Picture 1 (cartoon, rainbow, N blue to C red):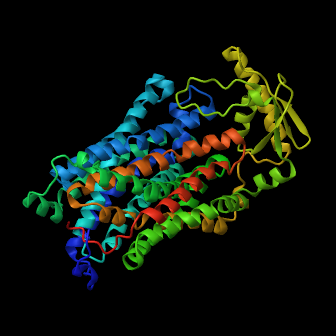
Picture 2: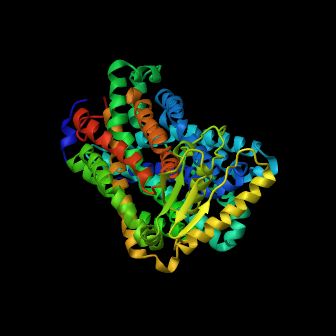
Picture 3: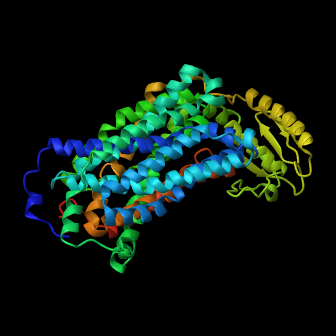
Length: 553
């Protein structure tokens, strides 16, 4: 791609036509993200409703993996819908994607739970998540490409940054609706059946979004390309040709993978950490995250605008750098300000599991065929569910695992071979003893809302969101500018959705399993840190700046 004279002139003003394109594309995309993130925001409740046939730790991992399943198929959706968008047009393709997303979300709201229809419930849920993921794979590339191809030279970073706000606004909307339903119905009713309301209500938003998108015209660059006969007959195949395929790989590892883990780490994992690890009241945690998102969202536009001035690449990579350096201190700070009792108890009465190391498993089983029945696994799973960090000390081979907390000691039990009734009774006895031990040592069952330092907690969460805006604000313009018009939709969608779908989407499940396996509440952060560092190195040395390129080629 070459720089044109028009790219270096005075940037065009924001016309009414531009505003309509941005508004229509962004509003529809907000709805799709709202649909997608309802599930993530309700992961704890989803685990109880649809994965109650396994133990609580495994159920939570399954719920997160079902969330991740939608991310897993996003690259396949990107390949299919991206190819469709490069052949028949941007507008009609993202009309199809929004219909699939909306209908799948509505059906989650009417799906019977595990108690009603057994294993069919989680199976159908996963199928719906897969449908949502496929549609999302075609959505983002279409919206970003559509807006960028309408944008005047010198303003693509700013214009596409409106699309970048949609993911966070969709998350914010999902949190607001969930919070409103919780306050209206009460916690007990909401967790029993009220959680369905946000899913059912999405059908109204679907109708509005489809109507708005029907008002749009096709992208002018796409129309010009088709009129000149320069389109690709097989965009997916052409995207995989040597030079372009190499570029897509570099974009994946040098841009979108790091962007993805910073995005999901700063928003979703932060919410999960507050609720599941620190035991902050769900309503309070939603309010804290919502406040941080509200304060952070304008910076998507700021960094999009700034990328038009100084370049996209350096802002994205700087976001990866500061996230990698500060994640562990920031999450430790969130613990200190959101639930100081956990920090105090860990320092004064550390929990130690004394067990035969050979009996302690890494409790991550995505297909559900393994049973974690050793006395060590029973103890560590119980501590993880209670949000109590722990360490493991070796014991003689064959001995039962013991838990030492402060001056108290609790002996675990072997669950292998026990009947269902026996297992339930032993779990009840062990759970009661464990609860008494950790409570006397000062570990809180729930975070004390009165002790939360709200301003400082919001400040730290806002910093995490600020990193999100750095890596995400300029990424759409950067991806659009890297690839030619004839295969742009497909070529930008594939690395974006592999990065976000696989590297980012699996972050909650991988990080949770790392914490459950080690007892270190911050150990899961090493996954996003490692990916962010990889992106920083590859992006620095192998990717170029794009802000002044001519995208009409």
